[in-house]
Image (cartoon, rainbow, N blue to C red):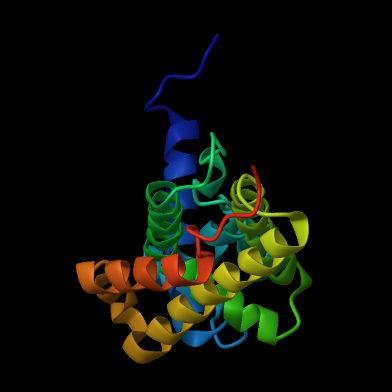
Length: 203
């Protein structure tokens, strides 16, 4: 017999999600080492013992937090004919939307990478790999492999550097700053300049 949608299992899942949300915020602000289980439990309105019912350790909480989509929807932009400015804009928008939606976890990821966390490093590399693969697939419709690699790396560096600079400048206000039309339009403009889509070699 299936479990009722509002039964004990649903309540347990909701509590887990609240724990992960609180931990994500605390880890991003205070850092993993400086955050205690007690702080997380208090933020959710639980006792330490009640939190340990859902997670065996603080590290287990962090491991659960890393379970995030790594492509941000970028991979859905498949190459269909020659790479166009409109296609590039849509890829850039997906990348910006992803950084806005996942600001806290990306900030946490950066902190943990600096601490040597291999899971965080692997996730960032995987995310960038999806971006590289998607952009390269599009560039190959207009230029040769070497040139596609060069332009791809230039765009990945732009997106990474632009979001990092805006995060450092705006702190927790990054989502609002990045969601402004000016930031998005500037990123698109720079991306178009680096992509040089009017300079085609293939065909």
